[in-house]
Image 1 (cartoon, rainbow, N blue to C red):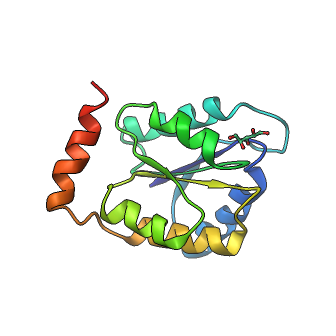
Image 2: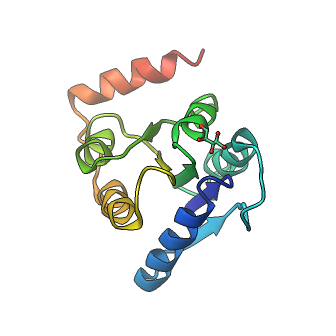
Length: 144
Ligand code: RB5
């Protein structure tokens, strides 16, 4: 199960991504927003990341205008490792090396084609472990 959330700047891209996930039969929880009216990205990040913290979802996809605000908000929540991406290399390596559990994208930067390529890599790439485990452990220790 994955969780999705967007503010108004990411709403259109979220809806495009949902069409792709529906076509592939990927299950998701959509935490909103549900139209293009203005909402605050920290509220949207919080709702989605709580689903990961509770175990209802394993990974998350977040969207705002730039992808930056919503990724900063997500990274303030315990247990969340969110990467804001606009290239496929980062989307793949944030799984391989950082064990990222949330991918953020900018609806005003990234088109649906690139977003879907990044999402496929993000969802289907396993964490490499090994020397990266120690680094991710140190990363998470920064929360304390
Ligand atoms: C909203 O206008 C915009 O600030 C937001 O979507 C995002 O880009 C913030 O980082």
